[in-house]
Length: 458
Image (cartoon, rainbow, N blue to C red):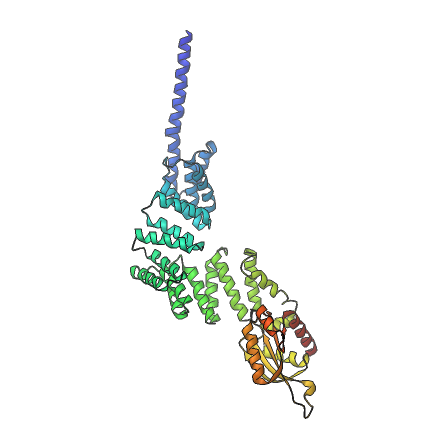
């Protein structure tokens, strides 16, 4: 056998092997991958996942298998795993080889939006506006993301591009209305909302934006009705319920607000949605104003366990941490109006040595006019009036209250006033009281006085 024949045989054999590998990769292997979407369509999700993993065990760079595995995880309600697979595809795949780029980025963007990965979602949606510039929904999604980020200038531009492509997009007109209202373009805002509702009265999300506008315009009754209609939109239901609850809070209808906040909380089965955290925060505020402090603390503690930096929750827990240790302060904050007046009167008489002459209940607490007991039985001595106020509102006393106290002192002919607050006084109130015959008693000293009064009563 000649050397030339042997070399030729080796070359032919190598070519045959290469052809076999090529046939396997281009025919047999894709057929195996192509079986995955059929399994997904048939609802055989575990089988689809298993097949994708088998393919990837042999070839980790098969990005079509990664893509289908991501789709399988979406169908299996495992978005975190789906995002991991889609990120691999996004970073490595050559689109067009079994993966349509526009469809892929649409799916990927929806995953990222649902998972609150805002910056990544924005990047995908912006790419879609370039890849599919005639699709108004791509511009709408970019606008919504910018709005959520507080970039109303950019959001407005993308919403206006949306309606330029689709003049009858009711949702986009409603979004434009809200953003115009935020930038104080009131007439244009109302026109956009009205047009959105004219285009589609059954697009209930538009009522959500109408409610926001009416609430800010102090039309609370109209806002409540708008938020009731907005609840018919599944996407806006929880937000609309919370907003309606806030409206009830504004008009001091806590008994109506509390059920709304509780409904919103109950809608979140996982207990982790940002909206339900806000619902708990407002629910706690209702309980605090109703002086059901134990219930308020329960909500604040839950919020703190989820988000330690949420608003002023940490400060609230710190403010009320002594309640369990000091029953006197707890009674001061949580008792009903009649009991509260008795607690304050007892403090005046037993600790401050005053004889109460008259008492008034106030929305923020109570007010007494009194005289010093040491002059009580002294004939011929003009009894000098002392005014005493007790505040138990959940916010610091502000300067206008000090002005009002000064006016009351003039009317009553009082020589001095004591203002006692469980929440303290803001700086402007403190500055105004300086040099005037008024003593501001803050929480720590008030707690001491209550303890002393309570101990003497026993």
